[in-house]
Length: 135
Ligand code: ZN
Image (cartoon, rainbow, N blue to C red):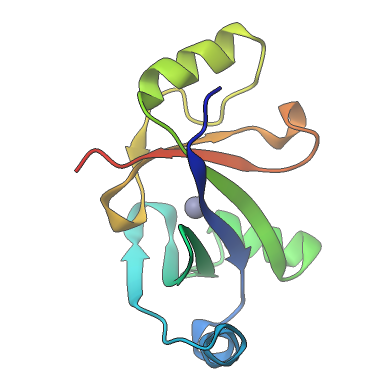
């Protein structure tokens, strides 16, 4: 699939207010951005570790996918995001090779990235996100 690097690791948390101070201490840095992604019903907070970000995800409502995830499996690792070029082409290739897609077309994620998720049923149980920075 020709991924460039791990763009971020998504971690589901019940509360940004409770988790940000922990991660600030753990990583020895301040959270550099907090952003609400209304469409996905999440509030995100970002840290940067090398080229890779840590993305904390707090649900903004009970019908958020993150809320359902936490209810089912508790807080914790939610997804891995790979940085790619030509996201649309990559999705097509993935689908042609039998990978089930959650998003057939790219949509807007946090930080202005185009994103799309692959279904964990096709990826050995890990929710994977592909993202492209087109800025
Ligand atoms: Zn993500």
